[in-house]
Amino acid sequence: MSATATTFRTRRRPPRETTGSPLLLGHGRLPRVLAGTALVVLAVVWLLPFLWAVVTSVQSEEDINTTGLSPFKGAFTLDAYQQILERGNVTVWAFNSFLIAGLVTVITVAVSTLAAYGFSRGTFRGRRALLGVTVAAIMVPPQLLVVPLFDQMTLFNMVDTYAAVILPQVVAPMMVFILKRFFDGIPKELEEAARIDGASEFRVFRSIVLPLSRPIVAAVAIFVFIGAWNNFMWPFIVTNDPDLMTLPVGLATVKDAYGIQYAQSMASALLAALPLIVVFLLFQRRIVNSVATTGLGGS
Amino acid sequence: MTTTTSLGAEDRTASPAVAAGGRRPALRRVRSGNGLVFVLPFLLVFGLFMVWPIVQGLWMSFTDSSLALRDTDFVGFGNYAEAFGDPDVWSSLGNTVFFTVVSSVPLVLVALAMALLVHSGLAGQWAWRLSFFAPYLLPVTVVTMIWAWLYQPELGLGNQLLDALGMAPVGWLSDDSVAMWSVAALTVWWTVGFNFLLYLAALQSLPTTFDEAAALDGAGAWRRLWSITLPQLRRTTGLVAMLQILASLKVFDQIYILTKGGPNGSTRPVLEYVYDVGFTGYRLGYASAISYLFFALIVVVSLVQLRLFRRED
Image (spheres, each protein chain N blue to C red):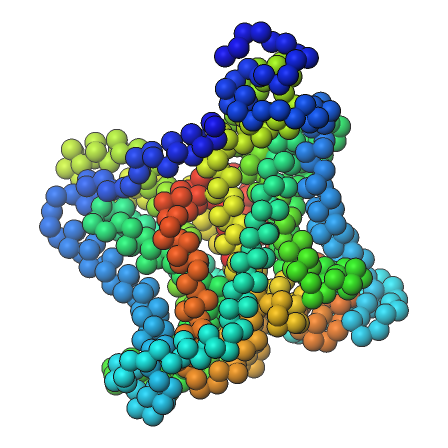
């Protein structure tokens, strides 16, 4: 199937890994040493909070609180992790996060690619006007809609449901716009041939346009997933039931309950951080390219 | 490729790509030439969860709508008039602008420095990229939990380092004049990775010819950075700054979790005030009015930025 062939080819493309232009630094030793030092210092500063959290999480609460100082003094223990996992709510929230972010991604990608194709190839009346409204909506910050959205969910009697968390998140005018721009660039000759042979419009979309758009669809999916996984304000407002909360929301509600249990606090933070870090390690090149090709995101 | 283009017959279509899909003549009935069906699902969710709340919010902003009681009265521009005279609106707006300035500047400059350093071709590309981008992948709660621990007054890393250097401890989150800077530092650490990747992508796509020519003419690394690379990045900088300012203006999550706007309201941004008024004070109508004023501000900022951006070209 051509779809798999395309993916295969994209994956196998020799990595456009920069080794940078050696020219940038010239051949002198001094710039090289200075740049190297600066890079190492920056990286250490950026990794330090992680390291500090890891070190804290493998100590006992007593050691942290009694020795008062360096977490390096205490003995190694995984007690904090054990207690967190035994309590179980972090695993429930992780499941909710996966479920919600996964569904948001699937629905958003489906709805947005279809719409983008319709906007790109369609000839229906009002197409330009609707497209204009969609593009204008990119400017609307979702945070500003929480008050009326909450009112709407109350009206629909949907507060504290998965649907209420998910549905408002699937409206992604930015993604529609990015996909539409990409579809516009695909030559129409390929599709014409299929249309002449009687392929339905949906078939043309699914079998020709979509396979050619894998990289951009992947990019959109990645960003929608990261965005949904990390989304805080809306899920926070629309869920009160701890069993429906996502990781960021659930942790925020119990964060203060940890009090002076710093090891547990850090252990739960790190557990919550793990899934996306793993995703990043797996898809690093694709994610990096996604930022480059779409130039979107932001929090 | 088949040359027989039999419109009616089985779906034996022209390109091998299509042939793979196979069967289902039923779908041909969906072949609505004008493409409207494709847009319908989007229009549905867009109408329900975007247009409706926008219109509803606008309506609410002219009423005394409340979470506490169901019957609402039209109050005209009352909420808007109240907002203009509300010192909390102005102070939270001031906090938002202050945060935007002290976070956006380093978020652009540090990202640029990181990208230039990584692009200079030192070994270990993926390790640098991972270190700088990883925090961006963290949920906001995780970021604030880690930083709340760093900022912890007695045991936190910040004050321990100061202590080791023989300096007095700082009230990172308890001192009115320091708290917003602490929030900005957290934000830079958290989100700089995204801007860094934008810069890195831009650097990788720059033509190397000018750089090479200048090097042949004997220009040193420093000179070429200022006279060639940075000017070539001007457009990217415009884009990064534009996205960053809009993102910073919308700050809420990390502040709400870290300080709840304190101490003494010194870190409360506009969006948190909207939240406080609407969900803690139950005054949805007034909260909507503030939202719309803030939205108007964002539109103005976007338009000004677009203007400047266009002129650059």
